[in-house]
Length: 262
Image 1 (cartoon, helix red, strand yellow):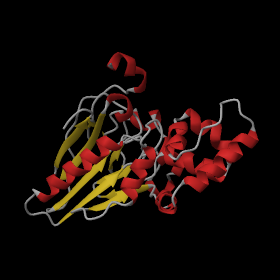
Image 2 (cartoon, helix red, strand yellow):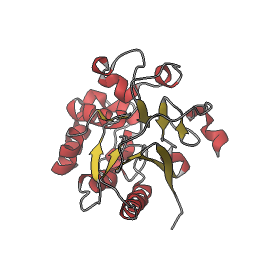
Image 3 (cartoon, helix red, strand yellow):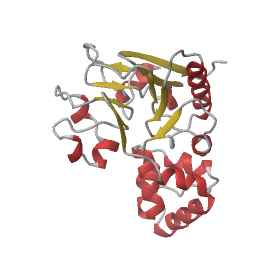
Image 4 (cartoon, rainbow, N blue to C red):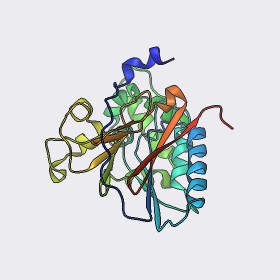
């Protein structure tokens, strides 16, 4: 399978020393790109819930979802429903925006963005809401009609969820963001384009950012961890593997759910 996936994956680098960690009693989880894999998401949420309840001495626990909940997978609408109604969990939850949510919002604002969104897998999201995607060569009227149909089909609480997504979260010494950052710029000078879309400039730079960056966006054959970044997009829609990282003190560990597990 991985021969087929090689064009999507970035090579790993040798791991380096871990940075200073979180305050005692604080635990953070982050989950990588879901892309409509609602079955894997449900298993991961159950696992994190169990993991949190089994912990001793926790003062606080927070789950940070790294974005790209929609597209490519046929369960995108179900993923948004699950996340937008997530309650009664033994941890706080923060939701970040990914480039795929941004592309979806772009289409809802301007039907001319539709053809680009569908190239990124937006057709599966539209179908999940009961809207047939226009053909690739369709004209502006077809895209406007699809946009209007999608806007009617999306529940109000789904739209509120999408509109409320955050660009990043900082919990020193970590920064959580969908794609990454420009290592040459301080946080105050970063753009949302960087947060949602950056790739090679971030991944291959030898420069250390002011935080260890926890991110998704770029699928890798397995999770990645060094002193600069922690990458947890394992291509769930292709591989059937959804990955989360658990951060506590100076410890960094990983959780995975796999398609077909019981």
